[in-house]
Length: 385
Image 1: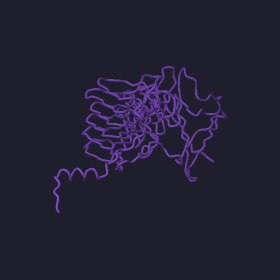
Image 2 (image 1 turned 30 degrees about the vertical axis):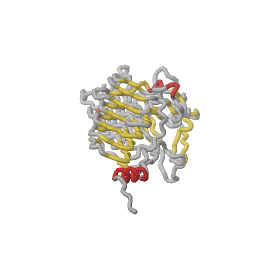
Image 3 (image 1 turned 90 degrees about the horizontal axis):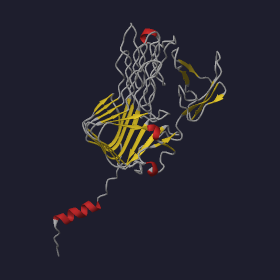
Image 4 (image 1 turned 30 degrees about the horizontal axis):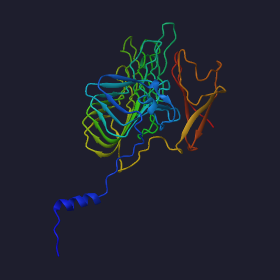
């Protein structure tokens, strides 16, 4: 005997039998709450709590956690919205660590999310980078102390009238730029390097763009702007040209990526321009048509994947053990001014720097770069075993 079933019953049964698609697995407990930005806002990363990045932060919700072992200020949000017309930016943690957002729900950026590097500042100051980036070099100091190179692995040189822009994903313009560095995965998460200050005249360097990871378990909708551009040098003058900072790093991870917004990590453009930054995009589903500069590294993720956030335990690691016989702290700050230095050493013609490597190929080359605050450009020396 034949029985008839309503078509909708058959459809319902088919849907129940079909396996549900798993959302992207982002390790966020939402303990920093929901972030909603309606007006221009600056988050002070110095308010972050010291601890392990994956600890419950409910007692200090919204402040984030600074994990020194990861060199990152981590926020675990349930959802994020930056409204149209609003800009969210940051003041640096004392470590100048980059920003990591782990979001269990959706992210909507209709306004601007900025980790831009700072423009030049008057001597004897140093331009402040975006979080995760590096400072710009200073220029001629009125007491007669000359300028300096930009800070960071690719900091620009201070070479008289042709100081160079900072480098990162590409090399800055000018005489004696630092090398490009980093990798397309943005693991570890790094920002850009500062431009060199003119060593003869008052043309300070711009700072490097910062670095941010936005990892979203739901839909990341971008109709606004994410900006990790480098800061500008001073306006050219007196036949001198300072260096601008390089672009920083932006890594976007989402289950679904949507929108028509702008993602930008370019170098500052005044004086000798800084190099390009790095952009990484990882998503399961893409419906976006974004305007991205420079060209990103793009990865298609599988449903339910758990993206790699940090370098694995067997990743290559390098650390400075001591300088001039003095031990270097595990979490150095490279502070200037009233703050105590990480290491105090006696003035000498030469100083020994001990470097330790782990999981590094024997044929690899290790370089040590020293950048004084003033009165000289940088020195880059290959280490010997």
